[in-house]
Amino acid sequence: MTIAMNDLSTTRPATREFLAQEHRLYIDGEWVAAETGKSFAVLDPATGEQVSRAAEGEAADINRAVDAARRAFENRAWQDMKPALRERLLHRLADLMEERTDILAELDSIDNGKTVGIAGGVDIPCAIDCFRFMAGIPSKLQGSTLKPSVPFMPDGKFFAYTNHVPVGVVGAIIPWNFPTLLAAWKLAPALAAGCTVVLKPAEETPLTALYLAQLAEEAGFPTGVLNVVTGFGHTAGAALASHPGVDKVTFTGSTEVGRLILQAATGNLKKVTLELGGKSPAIVLPDADMDIAIPGAASAIFFNHGQTCCAGSRLYVHKSCFDQVIAGVAEIAKAMKVGPGLDPLTEIGPMVSRVQQERVHSYIESGKEQGAEVVAGGTVPQGGGYFVNPTVFVNTRPDMRIVSEEIFGPVLVAMPYSDLDEVLAEANNSDYGLSASIWSRDVATIHTLAPKLRAGTVWVNCHNIIDAALPFGGFKQSGWGRENGVDAVTAFTETQAVCVAL
Ligand code: NAI
Ligand code: MG
Image (cartoon, rainbow, N blue to C red; front, side, top):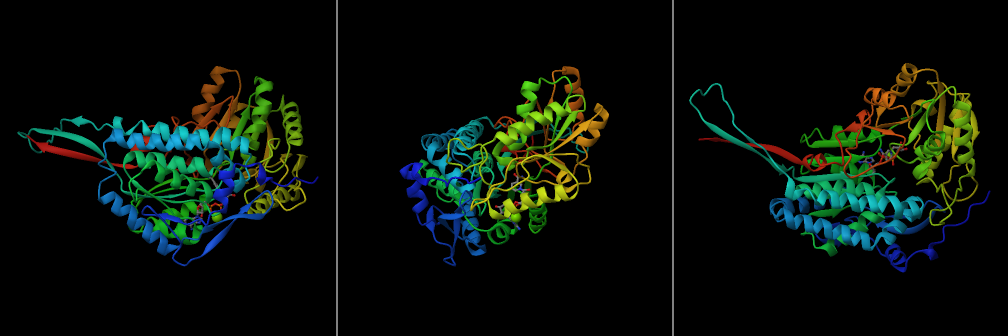
């Protein structure tokens, strides 16, 4: 099978103009080159060809950006801005994103490989929604009033209240699977809280973070409130994570780097939020509506080509309907059109990089070697792009790498089960605990099972449903803390108690 090229001529002129720009870092309201003058190639994963270049920021650039964010925090222009005005700026940014949805979607598609339809229909609208949701919070942030008893001061009378004080300078490090959306998940609550930010996008997908910085500039954010440093993880990322001038790091990415972020945070004991890997179970009960469960189980893994932290990558199906469900999911996998992200007919785009393609491919090979059976896919198409065919494995064992490790590609492992205790034990038999889904019409069983699943999100008759209002994050090694929801903003604040002797 030969895969067509990604046709950049189908994109908006503004998208192509942006690609052609000589990209710089955005520090202190200025567009500046990296101190070393270095830059790196931005590749189209559908072809492996260079489509743009980004400045290669390193420790010196992170220092400049953190200093700028520190000044912007200390001058209080942002944190003391009337909440209503801070809200208006966040809404203004959301408005600009809405106006430029097509450009943002095309840039994410070209940069990441995801289909332009998903980028424009899911990533960008959800990112805009996140800014709007968080924009609603500054004017509603409330502390509490308290009457302390103070047992060691029998005659004392006290009055106390709490403040939510912005935590300070935030370092945000994000991966490549949802470039605009994950930037929004970090920026929107941090900015709403009154923090200033240094954002380091993934080296695979630097474009929309830079585009967002342009929009923030256009919206009129005060100087230094948002800074973007593009560059690599072991240099720019590590410098940001260990910087003594950063008060909080918020990270999304691999569990392995999550551990490094934690270690780097020990110097100044900065606060840390981590959203890490997953190996999420989808559980089909025997009474499920198969017209919903079968396409749902397929979409749980194949959405965004499986490059989703909460992907339903382990499918557990009751033995009474296992053959039916697997046949259905395999049929969907075989029929999916693999192709470049800009082609409107594409359902599975390329992996983000050669490294990721090889990683996913090596997992597929390990599954075959360890004796699992391929019922769909299992191959990598020929050609220059980083494609992997959607793959379904059966006849697996819990000790196989494809069952226990995060693959982060369009690879599903499916297992039959006999009873609820068995499936619960298997579903929870993972170092990860990001999400799970239950497919059933039996209300009592659903709500008996849900709280026993060790997962930050449990979906019922759906999977990969995210919303700015819903807290998102992991149990176990899937992370620390939660993103989204009202509490996402307070997570970027320190709670201060003010105690007054009357
Ligand atoms: P990664 O965790 O290395 O990269 C994510 C971000 O961390 C990037 O911005 C990167 O530059 C930065 N980074 C890397 N090393 C760093 C360090 N020492 N200090 C500070 N920042 C650092 O993820 P990678 O290598 O792109 O993907 C590897 C695997 O991680 C994937 O196959 C997948 O299993 C998992 N992953 C999980 C994601 C999620 O959404 N939870 C997203 C991306 C990857
Ligand atoms: Mg890495």
